Length: 122
Image (cartoon, rainbow, N blue to C red; front, side, top):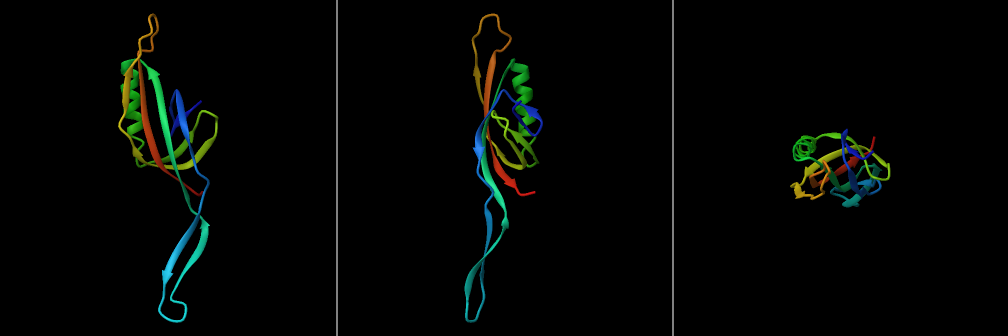
C-alpha cells in the first residue's frame, strides 16, 4: 500500500532519481590550482504527488499528518510498491482539496499534495 513515512495514501505518484556521486570542487594555490574530487554516492532528488480520498474529516486529518512529516527522514512507498528508504522531506506543498459527488458513497473529498526532498545514501 502506498505511504509516506507511515501515513497511508490512496495513491503516491512520481519517482526518485538514482543516487548520484558527490563532487567536491577545490581551489589551491600552486601548480594545480583548481580541481574536483569524486566522492561516494551522495543523494538523489525526488518529487511525489500524494493523493488521498475520504470524508472531509479524514482528509483534513491526513493533510495534517503529511505536513507534520516535513523535515523528517523515513520511507516512501509508491503505487508500484517501490520503496525509497532514507527519504528526507524538504517541502510539503499546498494541499489542493476537491469535492467528489458520488451518491451513496462515504468518499466525499479528494486531496492532492506535493512532497519534495532528497534520498540520502544509507
